[in-house]
Image (cartoon, rainbow, N blue to C red):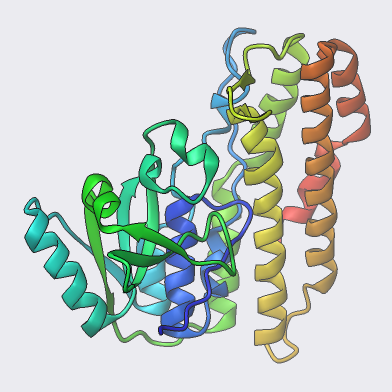
Length: 312
């Protein structure tokens, strides 16, 4: 049985989680690509009707470019579109045996191991690891679990599969830590963070109601919300990923850099975002955002934390 550890990280979408997991599997390391993991981009606010949720500009957009995995670790995923069911199945079976884990683009609807996946069709990426003795594939879904593997029946494989991706490995020249620091610094500068924070604060000020940003789904008490996903997953997760990156630089630099304090600060700010998410969600249920938004603006001095974004 293949040994594989899925990497479940807050702040990443499904393809990024898979790419990180595959990189770690083949290279026994992944942290250098987190140089481009931080993201806070808030769009233009033209009037009070603009949606808070959409303005975060995240969703399924890839923050860590696939090309960056190739540049740093030599990991490239080659897509294969094979219309024939039989040929696709044989192609997958052969390459599992010869090349190891395979990335697959499918539909979340056919991933039966998580209840909310059953509700709608949505692009989803998983990693196929091996065939079982039960007419199914053994899969990893890093968005769901860092320790549990799942079974995908051959039927669901055929119904959902859009593309198969084979991992190709390239030789790379080791990048010095100083160069990785420069890459991270340039990435942070490109984000125009102060402008995004200004627009975010303005968006809070011009909204008095959150009823358009959350919608109930008739499965348990699950609430669907792009805004909640940003505030409670993507944004605090970005801080956690960057803290991990800073600790990696500290350990890798042999005493040249020490970013332990900065990493701890990022983790502290991440907790503030989780708290802000809870305030937003509570305000939605209690229908009193006008009152709670003042608490958000007074509790979190967003301007004061901008200085902690920069390494140099």
